Image (cartoon, rainbow, N blue to C red; front, side, top):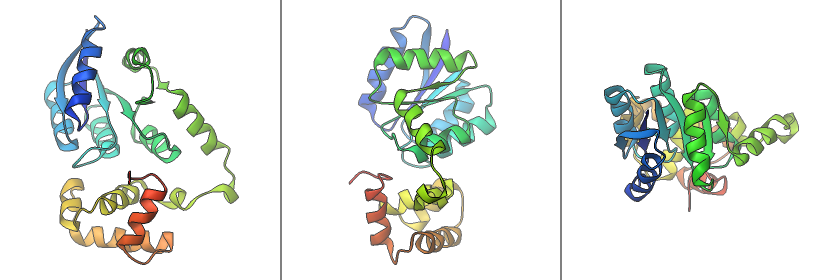
Length: 212
C-alpha cells in the first residue's frame, strides 16, 4: 500500500481526496494536515511514501513545506496539488523538490496516476504545468517579468504581506526575524518599483500571487 499524507487547509477538500485515494485500493491516507507547520510535523511523524501538498496554506506555505519535507525526508515523494497554474509556482515547486505538479482542475484519475508515478520514482506534470514550463523555457531576456527577478522567499513574503499578515506572523511562519522581514519588504519595493504595502497587495493580486 502507498502511504499518503494529505496537506490542504480546506477540510472539505481533504475529505474528498481521502475518499478518492482510499477508494483506489492500493493507497491509504496515513495523515492529514491543515497548515504548513502541521504538514512538516506529520511528514516526520508518519513517514508517508507520498505527500500531496497544496501551495496556499497558512503558516509556512506549500513551497516551504516542499523544501522542508524534501530536505528532512528525502524518501517521501512530494506531489503538489494546487489551483495555481502560473509558471513561477511550477518552476519554484519543482526546484524545491516536488516530483509532481498537478492542478485541481485535473481529473480524479490523474491524481491517482500522479501518486503512483512519483511513488515509483518518476515525475508527473499536468498539462497546465507542462505548458507553464514551456512558457518559461521559451522566454528570452526581453520577455522576463518582474516576478522572475524575485527569489522564492521574496515571493513568500510578498504573498504574506498581501494577505495582511504582520511582520511578526510572517517571521514566525518562516523562522526568521521581523528585521529580516523588513529587509525583504524593502527589497520587494525596490525591485518592483512600488511605494507601500497597498501597492504590493495590488501587484500580488494582478499577478495572481493571491486571490482578490
